[in-house]
Length: 315
Ligand SMILES: Nc1ncnc2c1ncn2[C@@H]1O[C@H](COP(=O)(O)OP(=O)(O)OP(=O)(O)O)[C@@H](O)[C@H]1O
Ligand SMILES: [Mg+2]
Image (cartoon, rainbow, N blue to C red; front, side, top):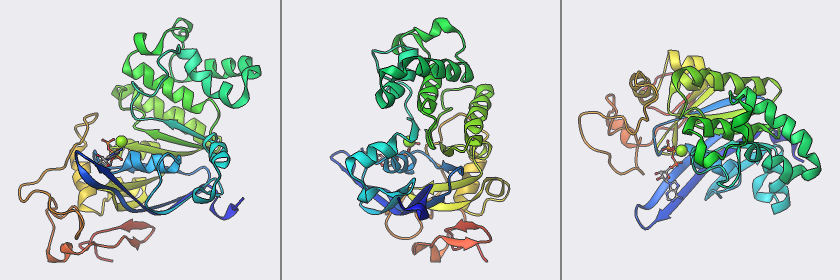
């Protein structure tokens, strides 16, 4: 075990997808992140900024073309498949899509206990059921009649999302990767879900919370990393980022956030369309402050406990 990187340490991650339809897509272009055990981080960015891709790398479901992932003391590049399985068992994952992520043939109770039975065997059934009941009550599915319902045919999207949250927490993970876990909840229950996740953080769990909403990010996590087209724009304590955003893209995201609950697909601005993504600041085509210097890529600079990639931000 390498205790120097206990928690999660991501260094300069890059991922490129190639598909027939879109050709080559650089989904991540150099993202780093450091969390100690128990830390909470929110990943924020519009659709296509690379948030889900980053989670899939952490879980070892996707291999980066460049960079390093060190999770719970292990360098994923050096792990055997058995090591990787052991590490994954310490990680809970709430996938983005509550429709596709639950087994179609199982009922609510079976869906929640399944990870326990896989890891601990059938002898664990009574304890797994007890834990599942407790979690289902915690996520607001407290009516026992619902526990025998088929997830696929009887539950709403919001209810499926709650089942998925209970399933991700059933093994008491050390790290929870939550990909837009409140996207199908209404405004009042969104706060409840965040409260539940925070209670699990209090027992020592780390949390990566993915959202496109900066206010939700602040409620869920101590630090925020803002991504734009696979690049980090800004990172820092959540309160400071929301009160005093440094990057023009973060300011645009905040200005768009009164439309709470809506998915932000792009930040628009009068002027030229997106240009080539590989040169200069990728946000410069939409940035109201862009100048000549922005045709070269701004480095991510440290600034009093925060980080920002923008030439316009002065020391
Ligand atoms: N399997 C894949 N094959 C090809 N391109 C992909 C694949 N997965 C993701 N991409 C592309 O990589 C980029 C980042 O995708 P990703 O799903 O990580 O974005 P996201 O920030 O999670 O977006 P959303 O908020 O819509 O979930 C997008 O341009 C997406 O189209
Ligand atoms: Mg996503």
